[in-house]
Length: 343
Ligand SMILES: [Zn+2]
Image (cartoon, rainbow, N blue to C red; front, side, top):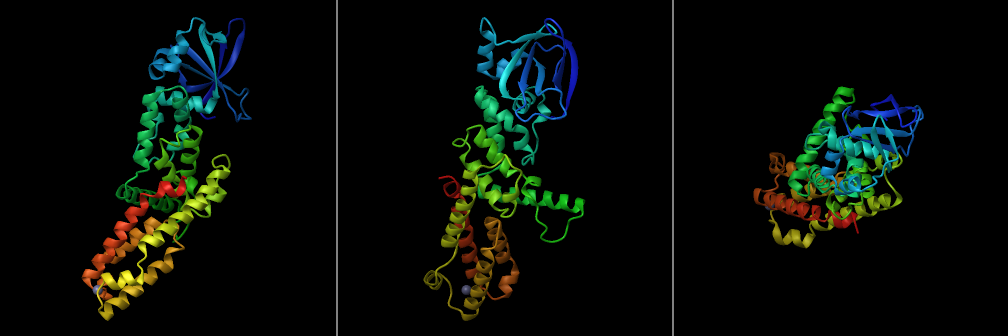
């Protein structure tokens, strides 16, 4: 665990060596919290980690802690340096994330789409739920909903910003060659978001965020099978595969035009019919192989809008109709992402 150091202190009857979080060790703190790491660090002398904080501030955020401190005999196991120690049953990493969120404001990643939000804030969310820290929980919810927007226009903007950041990063790393895949763990952690929501039992409240994270992860067809272990469970893999298939199916049904619909709605000018046929078969020929199907349709829209296709003789009114058809159905199916991935 990063940012820890050892302190020599005196306990009730002897001297002790503690491993402490150096960002969460306030000399004038009035409560020491201890927690055990479920995945111990082999280089550490002990898997217990200590934090010295202010009990009133903790109680301010969580009625559970407030109540705990009011009990006539608080849950205290020992006294170190004259300060009571409360050992929590939670994992030390989770406690660290939760306490840093409260006591070190800069711990929470800033920006609209912070890439490491879930890995930093997973523990904070889990314990905010467990200890009933309602305001903290709501705050994390709103950050997640902002980063995983439900509205397709905001989703397009997100994609655009992230793609830009990723290509900047690739350029810096000297990997600018075309088509070089970006593994999701270097991207925006959809797998960590999925694990975070499951572990904090917020699947209902964050249903949309969860579904969008599944969709995002399903855009890395090779990548999600190679993720570091511990994030996804079998149920997630099942959802990724079936949800993805369902989504592609819906997009195909809604966005594709049947020949009779085509004949009814679009002009009969031969040049335009030919050009539309070419455009359409090009689009659907590529569609099946597209990892990001909504992104692909968005690019197709832009292609359609560009004068290239007017020059290829899709007439103006038909190009406009086609564009509206793709845009409206893309928007409609995007709303169904939660129904596809979460049954
Ligand atoms: Zn036409």
